[in-house]
Amino acid sequence: MCPRKKRDRLLRSLPVRGSKLKLSKGDFIEISIPFKELERLKDLLILFSKTAPAAISKPTPFNIGALQGILKELLLFTYTSMFPVAVKAELQSVLELAITGLEVGPFPRLNTSISLQYLLAELMQITLLLSISPLNKDHLVGEIRSTNAALVIASVGISGTSSAV
Image (cartoon, rainbow, N blue to C red):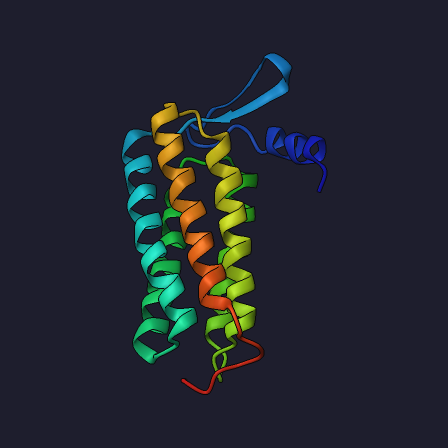
């Protein structure tokens, strides 16, 4: 979707439970986030960075269950966040599809890896729109980038499914 259409869709989603989507010079969109939500998002990204690559590189029932758990926690965070409706809907759809992909057997390593990278792209886009300090933004962007790199490394040589589950 082109950036202008996405921006327009985000603008139509307001107002939402105290969430503020502001236009500043050059039509740049910012999403306000309360401090508690920001801290929770940081914690979830750190957990995700540990569980996602492990589930792809070693798809044991424990690692797959841990990944499902963190994805469900991210989904709960999304439901309760103060994000605009359109942002929530996009993130929820990516999370729902990733969770659904984990529920099929045998474990689809390639599909899961692709779904998780798409989720990281959505999280990166939201992060870049957050109205937070540059230090916090750099931390979140760094966590997303390192998780993406770890997923790429974990995905090397996989194709199709694994019979771990």
